Image 1: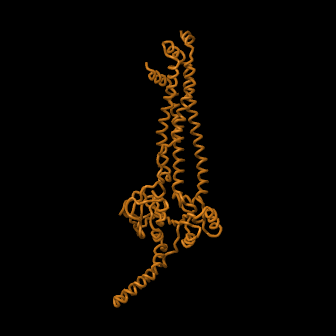
Image 2: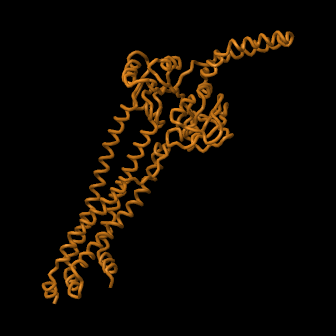
Image 3: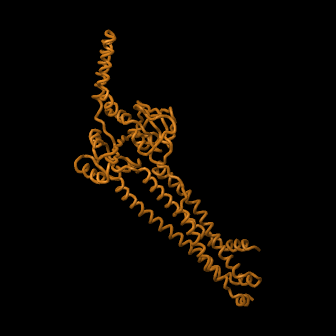
Length: 435
C-alpha cells in the first residue's frame, strides 16, 4: 500500500472529523478573502474617483452624503443650489478649475450628468469613438453603460430605479468613452442645459453664448436688411414674433439650479480656507472630500477589522481542529504505526504520512475557501447595488496570497506536532502491547 493510499484510508475512517476541519478552514479563508476584496475595491475606487477634487460645494446637509453623491455617484444629493451663486464661486480667484454637475435623471440605473467638457478632461477620459456633445440632448456614454453611437434614449426621473419617463425629449449618443477605471465609466455625460431644460429651468450655456455674440448677430441682421429690404421686413416681423415666443417661454422657466460644484484650488491654503468661507458666509455647503473620506474609511476599517478578526478566529479554530483530529486518532493508531515501523518504515516516513494527512485537509479547505470566497463576493456584488454600479471585480492580490500562505503554514504546524509524536513511537512496547 502506498503512502497516499494509507493516508486516504485513514481520513476515510474518520471522515466526519476530517470534513469538519475542511469546512472550518474553508469558511475562514472565504471570509478573509471577501473582506480583502471588498476593502481593496473600496480603497481603489475612493482613490481613483476622488483624484484632484479639493472641494465639493452643494446644498446644506450631510457633507459625507454630498461627497458620495457628487464625486462617487453612490448616494442621493442633499439638494440643489442656485446657479448664480455657483457661478460666483467659479470666478473666485482661489479656484483653479470648477466643474458644475446637474443630476436628476437616469437611464437603466446609469446616472445622466449635466456638466461641462472639463469633467472628462479632469479624469483624462478619451473617446473610443464618436465626438463630444455640442448641443443640448447630445450625450457621451461611459464604457460600462452599454450605449452605442447613434442610439437614442430617454431619461427617467430619479437617480435609481424607474421614475417618470421624460418622453418629451430624447438624448442622442454622439460618443463613447474608453474605459479608464473611474466613475466616468458608469455615467452618461451631457450638457448642463440638457438636464436643466428637461426639468423646466432656464438655460445657462446657450444664454451666455448668445450674449457673447449679440452684437455680431445684430450687425448681421442689419446687413441682410440693407440687401433684402422687402424680404427683410417680413423676416423682421417673423423674428419679432419668434422673440416674443422665446421671451414667453423664458418667463415660464424657473431660475437654473445645479446639484454640486467640484473645485480644484490653486493652493493648499485655499483648500483649507475656502470651505470655511463658504460655510460661514453663504447658504451653500462646502466639504473637503479627503476629510470626509477619512471618516468613511475609518468606519469601513473598523468593520473590516472585525470581519478579519473573525476570519482569523475561524482559521485558528480550523487549525486546532486539524491538530485535535490527528492527535485524537493517534492514540488508536499507535499500534498500526508501530507495525509500520517494524516492517521497515522509517521515522521520517511516518512523520511524512501524518503530516500529509493534515496538509490534505488544509489544502482541501483552502481550495474550497477560495472558490467560496469568489462566489461569495459575486453574491455580495449582486445584492449590494453600489458594488455592482462601481464595477467591482475579483482580484487576487498579494494580500490574498498572504492569507492562503498563512492558512497552509497554520495547517502544517497543526499537523507537525502529532507527526513528531508518531515518529517517536516505541516499537517494542507497542508490538508487545498488541500481542
